[in-house]
Structure formats: C-alpha cells, structure tokens
Image (tube, rainbow, N blue to C red; front, side, top):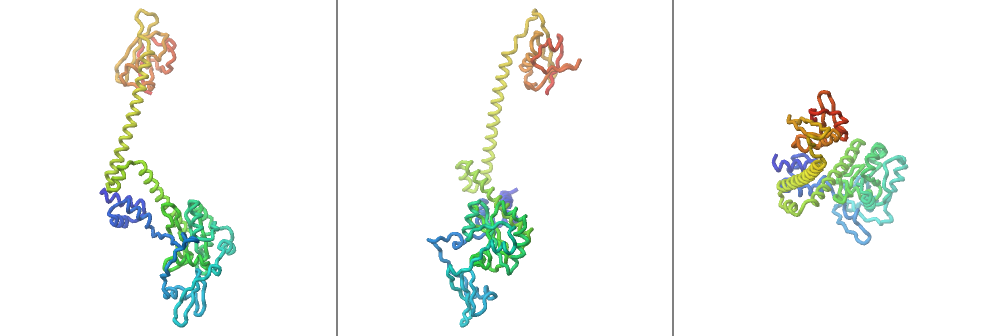
Length: 411
C-alpha cells in the first residue's frame, strides 16, 4: 500500500468521510495529514462559530455589526408576517412598511420594550412537566457557559407553535429515551421563536430559510469551542433525532481521543520527533518509533535474562554447597542410584540411605547440562510404578534399593 493510500485511510478513520472526499482534502493540503486533520477539526463538519453578539458581548465592550440585509431581504422575509401600515416587533426590531416608497424597514426597539417568553413554564403548560430537562439560563451565552462548566455540549431547541414544533415536542422531547441519550453528554436550552432572543437566534443560525423546530448542537470543548456540530431544521422524528445526537456525541469523543493520543505521543518523544514531523517525514518517524520500541523491548528482555541467569547461578551454587560429598565405598548404609535423563544418558552416584532425596535432585540439577529445569521434573520407577516427589523424605523412607534406575520425568 502506498504512503498516500495510507494517509487516505487514516484520514477516513478520523473524519468518516468518503475516500474520494478524503483524497481531495489531502490534495488541497499537499498530502500533509496533520495539517489536513487540524483544518477539518476546526473548519469541517459544516461548522460555524458563534458570533460576537451572542457569546462574547459584555457591558463594557459590544461590537457593532453592520446590517448587511437589504430592504428587499426584509420584504421577502416578513411579507407574510407584516401587513401594510402595521408594525411587528421581532427580535428587538420594529419591522415597518413605508407606503410611499413601498419597502420594509427596521427600527431598533428599546430593551425594556422587547418581548420575552418564559420558555419552561410555557412548555410545561402546553405539554406537562415530564420532558427533557431544560436549562434555566436566560441567555444563550449563559447557557453556553453552564454547559461548558459541566463539560457537556449544548443543544439549543427553538420552537414555534405555528409550525411543526408541537409534533416534535410531543414525540421527541417528552420521550424517556431521548432524556437518557441527552443526559450523559448534553444540556438543553429551549427558546420560543416569538421571543426576541429566539428570533435573533433563528436569524443567525438557521441559514437562508428557517424551518421549525430548529435544533442546533454546539460544542463547548476546549478543542472545538463555540462550534456548531449539527443543525436540524423542520420535521424530524424520534429515531432520526436520536441517531444524529448519538452520532455527534460519538464523533466528538473519537476526535477528542485522537487529540489526547497525539498529545501523549508528543510528550513522550524527543525533539528529533518534532523536527521530523515538521519536515513531513512521516514514514521515517514511524520507523524511528518502532525501532525505539524494539530497542526498549530488547533492553528489558536482556535485563530479565540477566536477572534470571544470576538467580540460576546463585541457586546452582547453593545446591553445590549443600550437596554432601559422595560417600566412600567403605561406609555403611550406602546406596547407589541411577537416573535416566530425557536424552537417554544415565547419571549414577552413591548416597547414604539416611540422606534426603533432595540431594538426588541437587545432583541431577548440577549434572543434567540443561536438559531438565530445576523444580520442573520428578523421579519415578516403572516397576513397580512409583513416584518420588517429596524431597524431604530419605532414601530409606522411600525403601529404595541399591542400583535402582529412576526415570526423570518433566512436570
């Protein structure tokens, strides 16, 4: 598999995009996988950042926004809502019609005159109190900060009773299943379209055409702050809503996990890794990491073998000192035993009958030339069939006769 094909597959596993789309994006970034991934995470998934008005406005600093909407836009947007010679208060504006010049215009409404809808009591009155839990925050920015403090994503639900909101509220927001799905990773903030805040929210986050209900999912994660993760408009059933919310949750978890893993790697590797990364020598980097792992495993294995060898040598030396010298033929109560090794060779030696049989084990351990591992075999006779495993018993207690041939059997 070529290096570019590997990058396409890697980018696909991160983003979930089609392979052709992955290839196009990588080509745009000159096949730099890291740069393409960062660009996708910050700009991909059809994301849009919050604007200054909703999230970052403070009492001491407010950025004025240019009204890019022409009178024709207002006429098109509000022609079904506003009759001639009348005015309608939407989103903190008076939408008024100029008879003489035949166009709609806007006029800012004072804050104390704006229309606010107490969403939760109104929702309870319409549908009852058993529903998904809504945040009590009064502003979008406050709701965002609450979700951020709880390390959860924020779902904004904008309802309009004159559209499909009633069906969505009853079939989705009142269902226990969605409460369980949302509760783990999300907080929900509800708002009514007839509320000035709702009108303003719809004008900024619904796109060119607004359909209700409007559901927008925002990330509060440090790596994806103030980013729209999904936007749902119009008719949506429980299954589709659950699938999309679950997909958002799973996608953000995967991406955060990938970032976490990348950070761990960056901490563990040395300056040479960063130099190679900057030069886009990805293949060389992988080889270096693999080589380092091999060397580390080899070092650990050598260290383990050294310790085992030292322990084995110490054990051999202990057995050598503990094993008594072979008794002289003139001594009484002498027994000569033979031991057949796995390779057919036979070892033989004289012992005193009152010695413990562990001396026989010591003798074989010292002379088997590695054919038997200490403490991993036992002695036995074929005729009669008998095993000799208790090393603290004496030859006399086992009633071994002179010249007995013992078989060494691996456990």
